[in-house]
Every structure is written in C-alpha cells, then in structure tokens.
Image 1: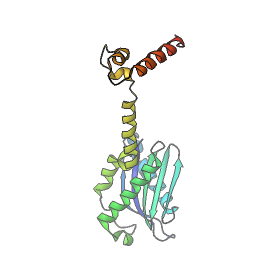
Image 2 (image 1 turned 120 degrees about the vertical axis):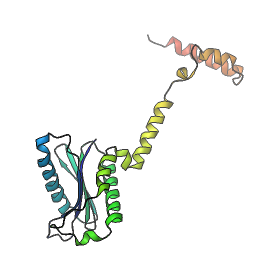
Image 3 (image 1 turned 60 degrees about the horizontal axis):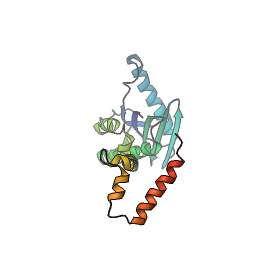
Image 4 (image 1 turned 135 degrees about the vertical axis):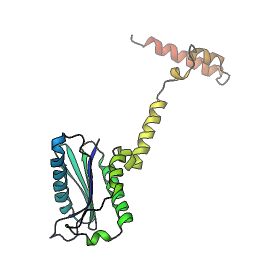
Length: 200
C-alpha cells in the first residue's frame, strides 16, 4: 500500500481550470529520469480529476495500478494518488483530514488564489504523505480492527499450549476440585469416545 501524491486544488467556477494550492509527492520508487515526467503527469491527472469532481462529492478513478481519489468540499478539492491496495475508506478519511488542516492553516485565502500565484509551501502535506503510508493512521476504525485481529490471533492458542510444559489436561482434570465426579467421568468418557474415531 503506497501513497504517491497528495494535492489540494481550488475548483471554484466550472469554466476555469483548477488551481494548485498545495502539492506533495513521493516518486522515489520510479527511475531517476522518469521522476519529473511522473510529477507532471500526477499534476495533469490530478487537475483533470479535480475539475470533474462536483462540489460536495467524492470519487475514485482507476488508472492502471493506481486509484485517484478526490474529495471536493465546496470548491476546495483534495486529490490523492494511491496504489490499488490502499483502502478506499482510509483514502477518503485522509483527504478529509487534509482539507481540515488546509482550512486551519490558510482559512479562506484559497478562494482568491490564481494560477499565476506561487504555490505556498505547506509542510503538513509532506508529513501527511509520509505518516499515512500506513492506512491505519488515517482510519481509526481500521486501526482498531487491526488490533482486534492481533488479539484474536493470541486467543486462538489451544489449551495445550497454555498448559505448562509436561502438564497434561488429563492429570489436571483428576486433580481439580472444581469438577464434580460426574464431570470428570464425562470428560474421560468423551475422550475415550473421540479417540476411537481419530484417523491417523
């Protein structure tokens, strides 16, 4: 799972091209001589997808092994380039966080941005690009699910693995004061019945 780029656009009037407000990309997995072309292509595709995402809408566009996710919040649009394995829910959670942080940092100044204005540096976007390579960081429910899965793996240990070395369940059953004589007999009878049916 990999995020290649995060971009923020101003997508105000439909007739104008979206204006890049912030851009961060990690193209280190491409060849050295391909990197500048890949960055240009990311901007081109990002601008195209942003211009075709209606206000208050989210969309995902498949392009080869990548998915381009876009979220247009009333003219302020975040676009993310992720590989096909990055969870969609985590992607949109990340884009929502990016838009929240952008508005905290810059307020409503984006509304007056023009194409010829220099793109301000925004360190948060680079940090987000690195931090959210793990989808669980973007989606708290995914993080909780992963922790539950780890706990479930631990709970799947058999009773035999929990017992101390050399200890047998049979000897514990015989020594137990918690089990009545009838329960001990039931355990022994069940074990005897099951052992005749075991195929080696």
